[in-house]
Length: 94
Image 1 (spheres, helix red, strand yellow):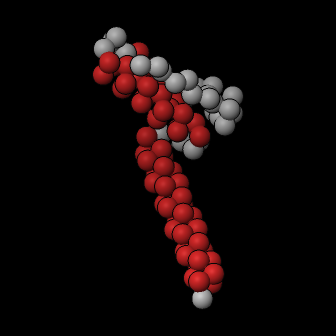
Image 2: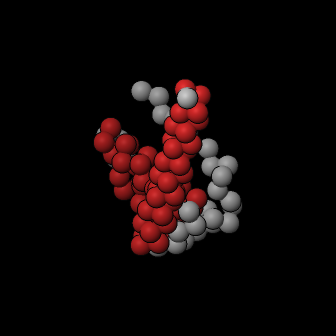
């Protein structure tokens, strides 16, 4: 199975300089024991670290709060797009 490399273009160098996300990345070594499960968990933990950087979270609680807010905003955005699309289709078929 091929392992994908993740682009970090959206993360600023200052965000990856240390702190919470660096601590998460450091802990991936504990999980990566050569087993498929360990490798999977290591990759997933790196995704959490990337998300912490992207959301500029500095603590676990802050990451959870910002992630929940971002998910709610995305959900609302897609809902509004769906409503707009339905309205357009209704206009076409009337």
